[in-house]
Figure 1: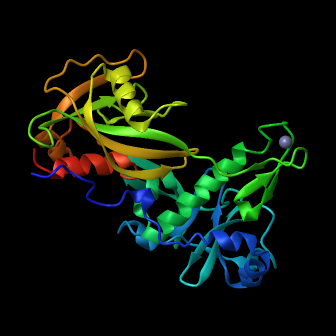
Figure 2 (figure 1 turned 60 degrees about the horizontal axis):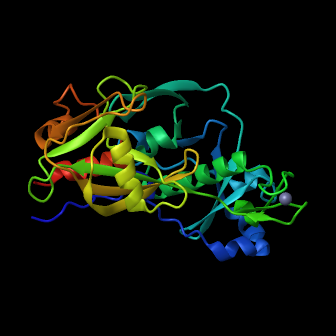
Figure 3 (figure 1 turned 180 degrees about the horizontal axis):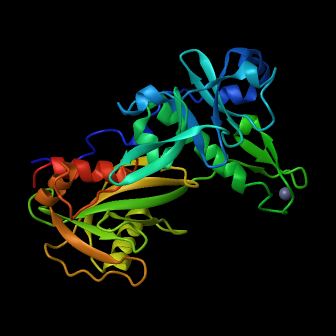
Length: 328
Ligand SMILES: [Zn+2]
């Protein structure tokens, strides 16, 4: 029996776009290619139009706009996302769409939202609907959201407090006051699937729920890495703090960007004693319990009303799915 691994690439780690880092320093080439470039427009709520016909099959392409329609050159607030299939892709913030109807979009496992739509397009948002996009679109929108959220929160210099200006087509800022340069930041967070010590992959998984979640939704444990802390140390501390359990054999599974506003989720598996007593942290964890593989498999099959799984876009979903597909 092999230790389980992720069975597929996490939804937001899919990307086909060449980021073309060197391009960011070649404005002449970028501006020359602008006329044929495509633009991912994103509204203030992080929503972008996608082809409505692709949503049901779970591989919707984004409905990008012709860059030439936005003007002869990239606007001030445009960010370069990269190149794919010979075309440059940019992100440009836009106002909320106006005068459209709405349609209910099912992001899976109880996540349903009314989104702006017309006959051809539906506006989607990454956190709820990232798993409904095709690979290229998921990669484009993940980078677009990461840059949008960074710029929204990074308007002032962390050193002298003065307003910053955008440089490198959205990939840096510079402070005219003290010349400090800043690049997009990402905060590491760990997420850990804790199973018991039966066999190689355990017979039960430890799940917990936060008080703000819908009833019966459970997920695996997660938390931010603290200053000066290793990832393994963070896994051990978070599980101890949240449910009072000691873990061992911490091993890395995979990662995905989570730009809400600026995290990367680093996925781990770890073992704990079978039937270890659980002490949920006051206020943070409403309930924690062990679930058998059969209970988790039944939830994935839509046959377990007592367990609502994490959203399909989250790495937690992929980690649980991979664990459920393995044997102990
Ligand atoms: Zn400054």
